[in-house]
Amino acid sequence: MASETIVSTGHSDHEDVEEVYKWLEETAERMGLGAKLYTQRATQNHNWIYLPVYVPGDDIFEMADKLQKLEDEWRNQEPEPYWELLLIPAAR
Amino acid sequence: MPDWKLWREMARESMRAAKMIEHDCPRSSISRLYYASFQIVTAVLLSREDLTPPDEREAWNHEATPMMIKAHFSTFTRSRRQRNDMVSQLALLYKLRILADYVSAPMSENARAMANKYSTYLTRISEGILQNGEDK
Image 1: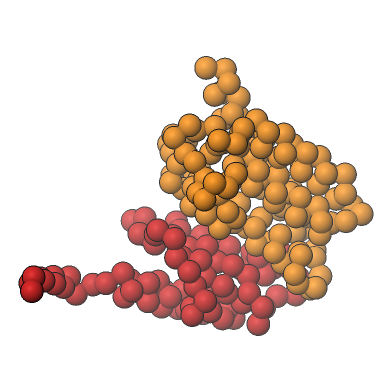
Image 2: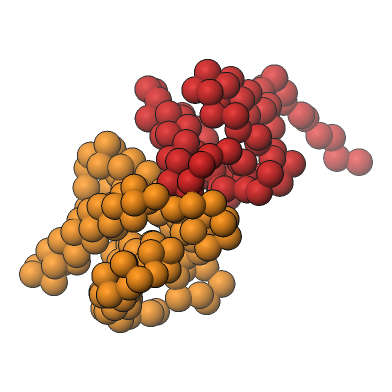
């Protein structure tokens, strides 16, 4: 039987994604968005995460603007983050 | 390979339609503004002979198109800030389009004004890129 060598970096992509979600939760709370992240429904394509998120709002511009501000806060970090985000409006 | 010039025509038609219905049908106008932006960005991507949409489709899907701007518009604009602005503006238009079509909450004048502003910006940049390519 061929031997396999598994090298653990101690840092998996999965853990990285969990860190992104933690950052989003904390930042959304700091911004007072009242957001609910549906991480179980998130999908990935290369280094992009497509994440459904619900935010409350009195009109649709307010909802879209809240989501976009959160997304932009992530995207415009320095240094540039590995993961890219597209937050998709979700129902409550 | 789809003809990028036909996608540019589709984008121009969507923009014309958005303007025609903006006062009577503002939600539908937002949808047309998003599609005008999506189609003109697709035209730019298709104008690059080294890029081919997956699965024999004519274009990249809605969720992948911002990714394509981020990954491939560096050929056209070196500024990371401008690429991020384009991604952000197309992403906001996408969100507005979903919300306008699926959520019954009121739609303020802000929604139409911002959709118009961002769609105009994306169209201006993309039309400029395509024109430069034709002039070479």
